[in-house]
Amino acid sequence: MSVTLVRNGTVITADAPARRADVLIEDGVITRIGTATGAVPDAVAGAVAGAVADTVVDAAGLLVMPGGIDAHTHLDMPFGSTTNADDFESGTIAAACGGTTTVIDFATPEAGEALYAALDQWHGRAAGKAVIDYGFHMVVREFDDRVAAEMDRLTRDDGVTSFKLFMAYPGRLMASDETIRQALVRSRNNGALICLHAENGPVIETLIREALARGETAPKYHARTRPSSTEGEAAGRAMALAEQAGARVYIVHVSCSEAAGEIRRARDRGVAAFGETCPQYLFLSDEEYERPGFEGAKFVMSPPLRPRWHQDVLWKALQDDVLQVVATDHCPFCMDRPDHKPLGLHDFSKIPNGAPGIETRLMLLWDGGVRAGRIDEQRFVELTAAGPAKMFGLWPRKGTIAIGSDGDLMVWDPTRETTLAAATLHMRVDYNPYEGRVVRGGPVAVVSRGDLIVDRGRFVGRPGRGQFLKRGHA
Ligand code: URP
Ligand code: ZN
Ligand code: ZN
Image: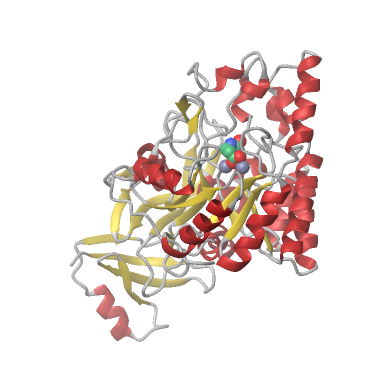
């Protein structure tokens, strides 16, 4: 039996006040939580503290929180004839170094391809590489009897209980409103959760064509051709479609006031609507697109960065539980690889969409959220671990520190200072959107199913130790 003891820390979960406690993990599962301060009888504390452990992590003076769950990543994602910059090994090492112990990635079938073929492919991409546990969402592009049956079976038998449909990218990934309605209706019956990328694809395509015809080819026109009203319109339509279908809906990467407002109003009238935002929308603004030359390409993602005032609205939505999750949409492409960002050197619409973020999510949210007084420690855990676990059928196995839960946790030093820089972070990409930003608070040790995988900031885990998570219904 393997035994890990995390000693003398202050345990923080989403639903309980902070408490001094030792956490005992046996064979990957939390078996004892003993409080050394008298709140729990000394005998229990003694039993925990006295356990014979193979690994002892001293958390004195530090916080012990559930390992993060990043519910939106793209690792080893195909793009044309290449893939994005992080595979399941480098990406999950970076995630672990940032305190994340679970990722949920997107398996994406080709047009007409069986969902099961995509699932097999994504299993192949992750197996033998992932250093932390992982699950998959499945992308749905069209709907027919075969897709319907596959959605049912994936949800029932394979632990793939959430599906993403795109309202953007016509001719490539976009699903019609009819398809979205059918998927929503199906999910009402099979218990899956439909996730939507809310941007009005056809309108955006028109704006892009018009911009290019005027000779507007620089990266900043990516943002100008995807105004926040196109996201707001799609989010509103998503709310109506979910309401009509009587189904739950989850909007991914909410970037703006209009979309958050649509979710808020839908929830107020009783629609089971949920949403996530990402650090880039909380901490970066469209000013980044004004950088000289091709520099703005670093920030080309969809939806794009917005004027700064949207950030206050997103923070309010996180505080009010209009948004329940902070994920990353980690999708890195390099600036110096000809088959990555430079593909759009002369045409912004050809710049691969996405930016790195899997490693910096928790540090940014702690520094700009907890330290800045916008959210408390409990809400931090809710948004980064407990919330995604509940939303995506991993609770209570993941997302909390409780007896019977997986021993996934991080020892957090709220005073640790990190200067974010591509050269020292572990993501396999040649720039960082926050280059030079100093954040306070970070993980010093990370434990995944009882294994110490990050020790004093250094990755000490093993590729391939990560396990596929068969998720339940949320
Ligand atoms: O720009 C982005 N977000 N790239 C990743 C794909 C997506 O839509 O999530
Ligand atoms: Zn998306
Ligand atoms: Zn994404």
